[in-house]
Length: 138
Image (cartoon, rainbow, N blue to C red; front, side):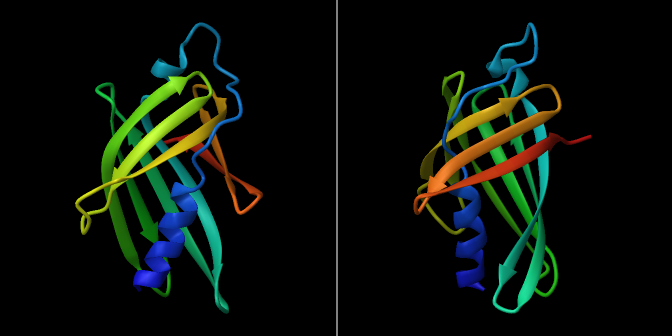
């Protein structure tokens, strides 16, 4: 289970880097990012396809949380708390701490798209660009 947890969390955390922001008219990225964002993922783990839901919430005070709900056959939920900072309009820096850890992992992510309804974060992982596309959670 620890290997699976590391694979899922690692691929999510590595999906944080920076490319540019397509911002909604009249709103700054600092305002647009606030609130809950959600995405659905499908990962191949051995001979099984694993579905998971990732929800991130960004608060005004620079605090954030992330919840990953992993489907069959694991049926598990992983939570992390931490902080975020917008370095500039296209770069997000996050530090997330897992419940069983004392220190967090800092990552810089590129913000490709940030509108009222869409957030796309990207990172480079082993020379391969990875993207996570979030929708505003209702």
